[in-house]
Length: 86
Image 1 (cartoon, one colour):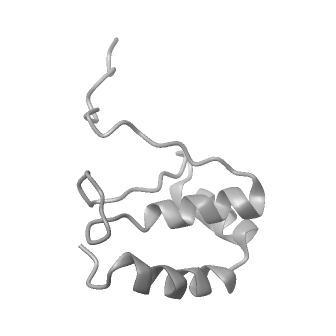
Image 2 (cartoon, rainbow, N blue to C red):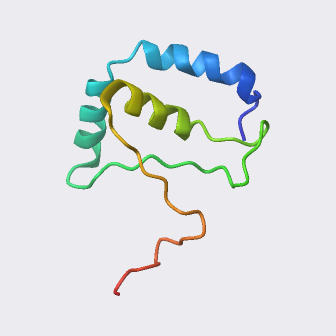
């Protein structure tokens, strides 16, 4: 869990994102994940609140706002093996 509450942390994180080139970030993620599709993960466990929250959504919202790139949510009840071999 993050040591700052969301109201304190979010503006700081947004300032970091504002200094980045979103196209370069996506390009770097694809290069690092090659040959796979990059995935943004969060290790926080739902349900989220003001003290338990996920900064992954901040990145996803930034990518959508800047590039129109939609970062889908994966249902929290699914396990990595669900659907494999079906």
